[in-house]
Length: 388
Image 1 (cartoon, rainbow, N blue to C red):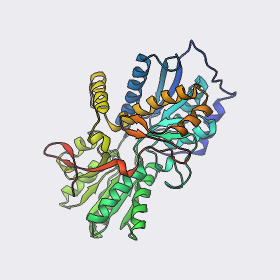
Image 2: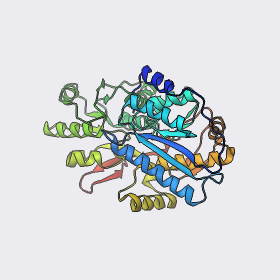
Image 3: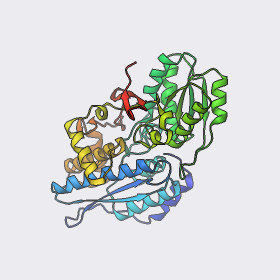
Image 4: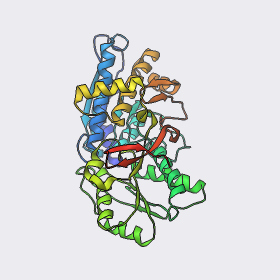
């Protein structure tokens, strides 16, 4: 989610010594690449991303494939490593992938390599935000990235709207320094600036994504308490969010805790925090809270195949591969430039997560209007719609 170094890009591009041919071969599958961190702090996100894509490929191939050819999914674990992600991206391009999905962990790497190689990069690319629009939501998007993930701009904005109304003593924001954390913070700060308000405390926390080890937030908790602030958005890993909840409760510090798009995407945070998670506020896709028949059917298929509940990352990943199949069909081509053009022309795609559209000016599918605030109820172990 999220860090990038120039040497990674150089090393990845150096791997390829000649152009890749995308000429059709009717006896060969259409190769779709996917990169995701299936281990580490965000490992459950990566696993869900892969599994959602696998279900989509199964569905497409069961219906006859695309242009008379089956899809083949080739995926790799980047272990939240920018260097490894760059190497894997180059490998997939060399192998003839027509598009590459991901990465949830190393989206800034895959986004920049998408531009370098001029190949569509889709699905859960970081979580949208600054990875897709580096200068904010109104800036031009990366021309080769089409993000279906849980947009950090949108999540930050939705949380900020609630905090403005319900946190008279101000808001503290603890976030990591990557495009993921900065994207969420950007969404929060934008709402506050428009209201002529300021976030009371804004602090960057460096985390260890590859291991998921907690960082120790007692100094930050003490500073928040000393400042008289009683609301905090902990835009960190589920492990650090849980540690924050446990530490504030152990101190008897009553603080309204906000999360991010990972907080309630699966049960990692809730299990780690236990009863201390009670009252935590986050947001969900409204289409997930009030699922359509298509969403319910997907969730049933997902549980049957993988023996676990679906998550928003599986669902958005699934939609991205289904849209890719439609794009290839409409373009009647697997050439990246043709796919890029057709993605930009896609309007009102009927996905399980909603009606999805792209344009040359918009490469992120999720907006704040598509989100509903939820609060964790420890008694029922459920995220329930927030009414106030």
